[in-house]
Image (cartoon, rainbow, N blue to C red; front, top):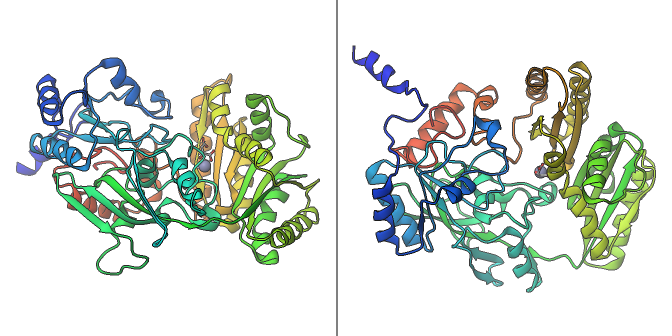
Length: 488
Ligand code: MLT
Ligand code: ZN
């Protein structure tokens, strides 16, 4: 009998966790008294704007509005909100700049949406220890700018870096354009200061380069999508800033030749490029249309953008020449070298615009973030071609080919049975990705958008462990509930 009633209790008709409560006007007033004036909002329009990210709400079963917004300005205020919500079993969803691509900061079960936008200070650039100490609401690109002023670099470089917050980058373990050489956001983290869901302040790691004193919780929190702790301070490694860099634009006859070329750079030139990015023909055409610009060789099957760094003119020139020669011997129609900042910026602007361009020109598409071992990229690209033909879809493939992480977009505007085609083609691609040793998301995360598909890629044991880790940090289940795996 007892067992049965527990099962029934879990079947909440609204998909809400039975133990969680909504926040009401009384909570808004109490939180306002706790935090001071101007830090709580119940304005419906504002709530709607803050309760979404870059994923169209329709792709996640409609809008998911929070009940109220809070704007804390310090770790202590974050802790006060956590304690309040914890006592009343009200969900808290942390939010950065809303540039996410998986609904990670979308409140699945109402409650309090906690914006970090007012915790936006770069607290320290520590030259002696080669690190930066920042609050979570700092715009990512600002960290690199502050580091550059001291001859240093912050190498986390997501495409949204001019808008995204570093806290969101940590929560999603954001990748981007320099992962091939420097690793994703998680690899840049030396330490985190956090507020646990019960309101206690806990530090993980620090300004140390090494630390095996206990588990590596800082790395566990990277990519935990705000489900384990609220991150209130971040210590990031900085690196010496290379004095020179050059971007190579390499149009290749075919997409297959372009992707087959990339691993040869490390093997044959013995250099790992700072970036190795791909734009297939349709991605190039979209960027051209979106930015009213022209790429050379629009007939090329794909363009690669390769970035190389060096400290001395000759050193960089040698690398550029070696990579360029190899390119030309491997199917490149031409190699264009951009060394000045303006032409490099123009090139990167075009590359970074593709995702936005798809959103601007299409309304029915599947936006995927697949990642496979780098040696399997050619087979993944073939599978995308096969899916497009079988289901009569157009496709756009671009992204971080050097990491094996491709943004595959299947386009179905104006097609009959668009949803069926997209659904079947996605499932086919997921199957091939699994066979190739790949997985569902390389950098955009699972969040709300991919929660149902994650089960295909995570073993039952891994899903169970995810739930147990979640419970260890958040036994009350109030922090960003409903994310990553069902039942979280
Ligand atoms: C990119 O690499 O362009 C980003 O991850 C964003 C996107 O695909 O929209
Ligand atoms: Zn990307």
